Image (cartoon, rainbow, N blue to C red; front, top):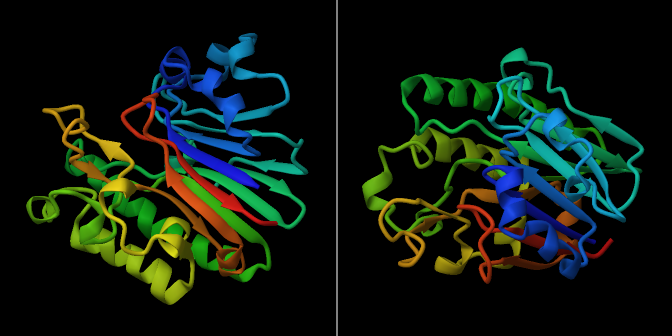
Length: 258
């Protein structure tokens, strides 16, 4: 089973850059997108966003041109969930879950705090709200793959300029500690790090558009597959795709033997 995750920075923009021409070559079972920046009305009727052989599901933000997530799956899901139960985040279209049997594949887009204190406060509220939810999920007997832009680099090896970013959103001590709790206490697994515990530059998934960040590989690893412990031994391959650019993020692909 192959699952690809990508912050598209606009699904229509990514499509123009060739995302859906590239997709058939990947032999994927799921494509999880974040930051689609489109309403359903923008996508309906366009064959690009309902490609042959795929079931497409979206959860858009109430605000036009903002946030939103999507999941493309080869199989029709048994159920589709799009509400976390907190209006602030449900209105921003930050979660979409497809269920197939005992497996849940989720596209998740955590708030970014980089725009200023108000957005950081929203991000912090999300982290406080979401951790109990993650405790519930890991205890309910289902297997989960939570794909997405988590907007947090966990360790020093997860971004190029870690020394200069310790006071910046995405690498704040309390954000990193939140991931420590998630992995070390609650028991969730960082899928990429399960295979590549020490890989640095090749692991980056996002680069600022400022300066020559991409050319110089001044990146951050903020996109993850976070999975339940039962899936850890099932992860066979994990890679970041950089041969073509569809967004300021790169696709993160994990292969699972299920």
